[in-house]
Length: 172
Image (tube, rainbow, N blue to C red; front, side):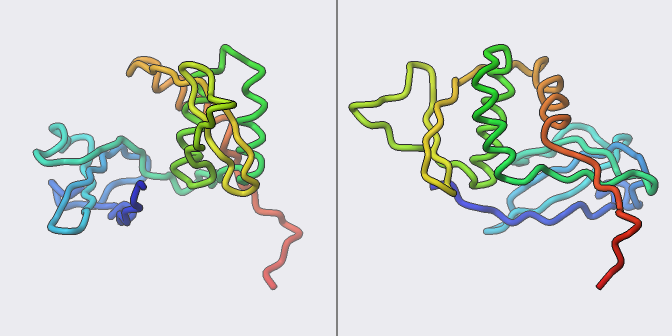
């Protein structure tokens, strides 16, 4: 079983330059082991020389701008429904595969046990929806580094929406 690891949010400070990260500035976050724990350090783009030795993972992100609207992920039921509907569009197989992996990471899906009477098709993985126990077959795809940014942007457009404050809503 895959374990869950706790990693801190961005420190909003460059670990190398010992300065705050500025609004809109691109930075890199790095995860490393420290004893039995995992630590996160953030590096400004100007200080980035590649991941430090012993890094487990890293990614690039941009500091939010003060006028930037908050984006939220669609509800779990919508995400599962989208995964099912994407089966009708073979040209979206890579996006569908990434969505399934993301939903597994969020623990909305889990690997399903294959049965002898109904095995998944070749080059497919069967996942189970945690909420209702239904099974979904998803085509496994190879994704090159050059394709990953385009697919990431496509998924972000599908999965996230802006939160706009409703002027009629008053705090209770």
